[in-house]
Image (cartoon, rainbow, N blue to C red; front, side, top):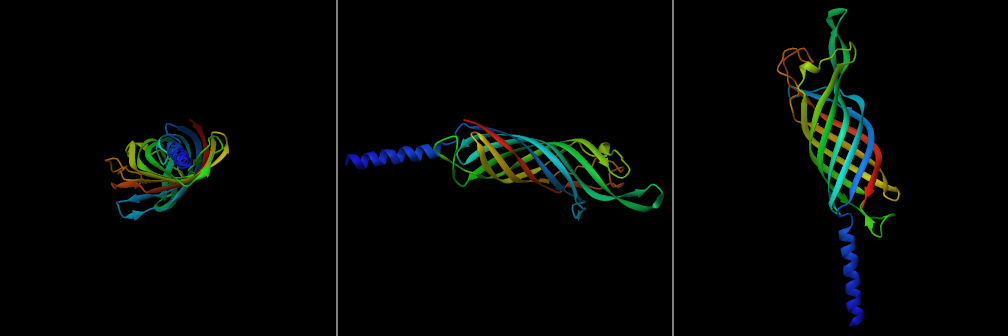
Length: 223
């Protein structure tokens, strides 16, 4: 009877220890990656995509071993491939990139799953994660590449939409992790200002389409 009671106590302690892991833990991260983005014109016409980059700072607070609240501040580059009038011939057009620079702030619920042994603590950690939530972006620069035209005034200063991540973390030292992730954003706002002098020389709606990126970075945990 005593052995059975002792076994139950040890098993209960182990279960509680596993379930309590990461409570109150903060993680801070820095990373960056390659962006692939496009836009949607008039809600039905998809543009060509361009390649750019992002740099991100992140923080996460664990409210449970499977759930955290994650926020990022991203120096984010978006845009699309399009056409502009050839300055040497008003009847001709040339291909160009419309590049937009944002400071983007997503706030997401971050779900953790999987299990590996932690180096820093006597419990297992969850290396995989999936994040979902809204974002808001603040436009800092808008430039057309071929002629160097600044068209920031033809766009609204704020963008918003849905942000999502899917990633994997590797412990490389005590309290330090390397992460690899797919990071996505999908714009819901019409970013074209109420002006006929828009980026496409017409009074049309423009939405940042799917912005995909592949990111690499470091996470630092504080228990």
